[in-house]
Image 1: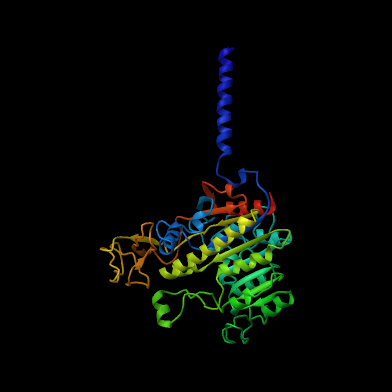
Image 2 (image 1 turned 180 degrees about the vertical axis):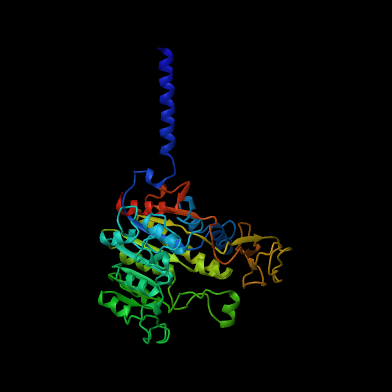
Length: 442
């Protein structure tokens, strides 16, 4: 009898341990103690931990901290696709928008050409459900408006290059605020715009989406100045800030030859766009959902343009700072950030001034053949960090592993409402889980 009792006690102990262990598996859906509120999703495309590190060193120094560093929770991001290890911009965005792993070529459709059924059971993205629930909604992109990091939350297409149709779907989506570049995809051929000539316009269906948007109640703005002047009681905004992207994504050498800046001077930064968006959407009693993408951190890095890449990461970090400041006064808001891939395979190479003299151009390549970038491109002077806590500055260079996207060391971060649900490792589908739980409380 005593032996039988001891066995039962042992079994109970083992079962208790198993239940305890499984309750702490780092899975977003395991925690039920969450409330509903607002969500700001910032997607600094192409950024790995090394990209953030480069921006930290250049702008704040090795002892300084980015806004991104100050977010409360983090997890290692696992982002493979249904059919390959490295995510595409469109496939990754579809997964964030639906909570479902898809093939790398998906833009909201499955292999049979049908809309992806989201984890919620609806053939809608999380933003489409937010629109149906009359929450305030916005997409912000430094690239063209059909860029998939934001576009996949409002549109579906058999091909991510169907820019004209994707732009039309976005205008017709019902989102309250639509901000980005890509004027040429709003206007029919032969129609000049504020940023583009009649010859540049790309639509072949004869539709003028600017006029369509105005008929739907959108206030259309074209510059930083016009955006910042919008009254707080504005309901719907369409911002078109460049003919194409609001940045010039080429190598440093090509930009210098063409005398082109990194970013279009008249275009607002994503930070400025977020500030205006928060001012407008925070008045919605049903809450709001914002998806913001700094696309320059992907495109500059894909061209191995180090100075443009780091500048873009800094712009994304400034937007993170605005969101965190908003959360201080509005704690019912979640901020979540992640990339879906590592653009260019950036790495920081630091050495002493003896190795990297401040007055001597760098070698074009490292000893293993990896291309090196200084502060003005290949074969130029090294970058110099901001001072450390002792006032010392350090030279460094950027090494590249390639031009495209890699799996990389992606880190997802969260701050504010329900941020504690992000920890350990996080699958790309869990970004949707966290946002959905916060928006809808389930």
